[in-house]
Length: 146
Image (cartoon, rainbow, N blue to C red; front, side, top):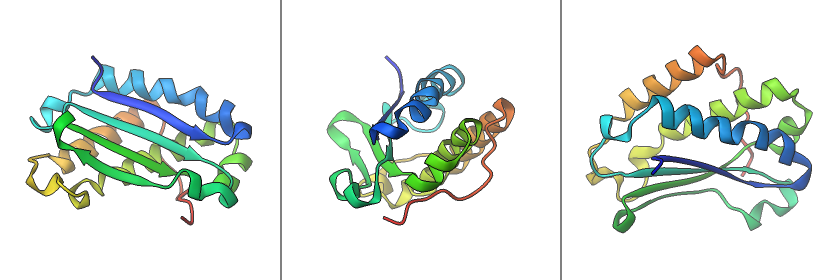
């Protein structure tokens, strides 16, 4: 079973750009990282990229939650639709990497995570080093306004 799962909630026009890297994220994370190196209480991290038109952003709101029964952390975070659509394909992977890195910083603030021993700093540094090694170094802030 994979510890890291990646999916997306995508407006059809952004599908190709997101889909190019979504599976690459999964392979990279599940090949190079082991959740057991950072925590014993979380068995999987599910990450959903949201790339939708701002006028329908309410349909897929951002979400961060820890599901104790399943020992699962679930995050759904949005990329700025216009910036993402106007970016060249190689830049989109940097936007996705940047969003993932930014999400790690929020782990301690997620309800239920305060009781979980999770080495957030080490995880962040390992993910960042992996992105740098793979040439996915984030370049700029691509967060959505919602």
